[in-house]
Amino acid sequence: MAGTFELWTDKAGEYRFNLKAGNGQVIATSQGYSSKASALNGIESVKTNAPGAEVVEVER
Image 1 (cartoon, one colour):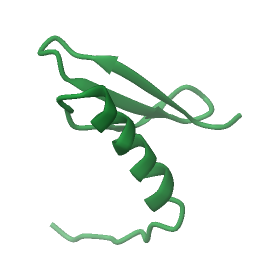
Image 2: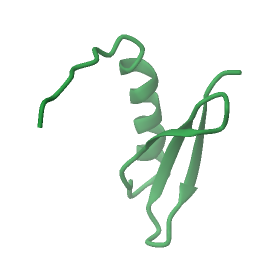
Image 3: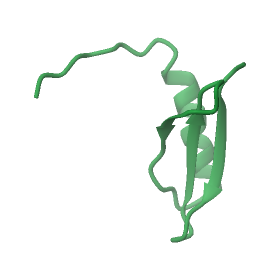
């Protein structure tokens, strides 16, 4: 099963989205957006930019 994006409005009135894996687990959560259009643009950005994203290990 493919992942899904869930879009909602938080208590402050900002739009946010979660990316859920096929098993229903949340694997990414967005920042707050002031408009629904901006949140939808954020979703499209994740769809476009994430498929080939490099994994970089950071030492802390």
